[in-house]
Length: 327
Length: 257
Image (cartoon, rainbow over all chains, first blue to last red; front, side, top):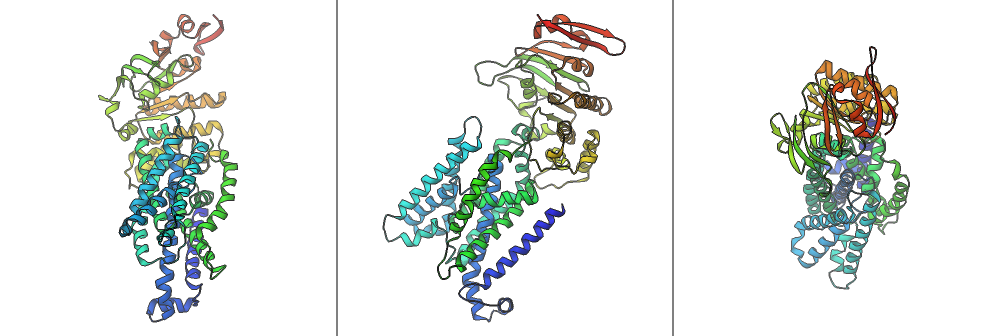
């Protein structure tokens, strides 16, 4: 219990620290005192610039991370597979592809992009289920099918980018992930969809707990197992799609964060879901801040940083995955 | 609970249960026995609505199971399965508290009644001292008791146990069976269980249902049902039935007939 509370306190402190550091550093530098005074008085010009440019970016990256991490927790509960992650099994790339197509063909529908992302993500999720279901879900088959679907959608998205037309630069951000040029409009979109998704997933935590038992045990506890799976999947896809629509394609967050969170706060979803949300926010904010400061003025996208950390981590997980579910 | 002409098939070709009818008497211990693959566990599955019968119905409190909401059923009937799975880091108390989920709404918090039920379940299964232990720190027998505790926390009138003693050594087997007896005699629970050990079935049951090839061979009190002829016809084993003051009726297998 003490460990759980301690973990929460530490991650909240780290997150606040990351927000402050991220707001202070970059091409415009201010001190903590200037930052706070400027925010309160609204007279410091530099802080006003930061408010316009850096704050949307900070909020978007935190919500993206939180949404992806929680979507990972939900997918893992539904698929009974600690390796499920929206980025790895193709949900994000499906979402990215469809929103890319829609934004290219109908640029006016920008605000509805999360909706189209959702359709793409749901389609990818359905494909993964349908193709890997063979009287039960084998964890390994699910991951392999997911990786194949991810490769397909990613490839389609990239070839679309190479068609050499004028639209390339404007839609590029839909599939790569650079948090530059995020505006308060982006914040609005991800805040509305993302926070709804996060609240829904908190309500679903006891269902997730029941699904971590055997299906028949969950049934005997009065759960309609198929319906619960469907609803949880929908929320997971919603979170992943919104994150992709606004934050771009980022893999491995939903793999890394829930795994570490389980080690720190355990498998009870009532605690695991909020902790993963905080963890995901911290991870992506840190990755984005590092990406824009380490090689300034060049920016390394957060998605690339995550791929570099996430690849080896997936190998590590695959090697120990046979031990994850026991009893 | 009444079982009315239930037919069930996994693959829609071979019927695992053929026109089974029986009545479970409230407040008694009923044990289902029979050779491997005879449909004992399948019958238990149909009786707990885990499987839907192809034909016929199971009626509980005057209502067919197929018309009972899963949550309502979970308030009246709890099941302990033979093998179970849970995240290893859950504590005994946490897992037991899952038994309260059917009683809670989506937003509900743990209330006094839940606390009481969990306490009672932990006391019955003698797990109060281990409440903060994680599942993977427990022995096989203790783990089985946690699953029973979870089912007890559901506070149902009926408890099903599917081969509760199969993977345990004799100490834990007797411990579980004595617990079953206490639950029945002290708390009035209706018990239906599947057992392999005929002598245990004789000793701990009020009624025994003998099954073979998806049908009920015979049912009744142990003394009526377990005879040398019935065991031979059902299992293909020659046995001798003995009776003595201290042990009551018991069976000794001799050879394959």
